[in-house]
Image 1 (cartoon, rainbow, N blue to C red):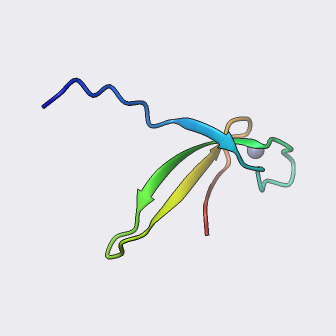
Image 2: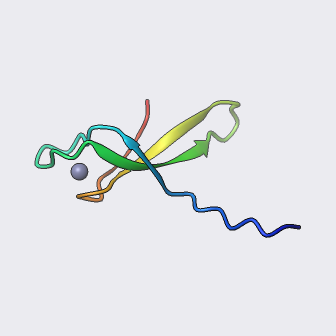
Length: 55
Ligand SMILES: [Zn+2]
């Protein structure tokens, strides 16, 4: 137990893939792959809210 008040939303420089958006900043969070040891980053655009996953 602890007082971990951790916000999971940090931003990083990542161009939004949406065609009608020219943002280059996105929130990201780490998503562990089920059954696997590696993690992928899940991005959410700060401007249009588009979500995509790091490949
Ligand atoms: Zn966007």
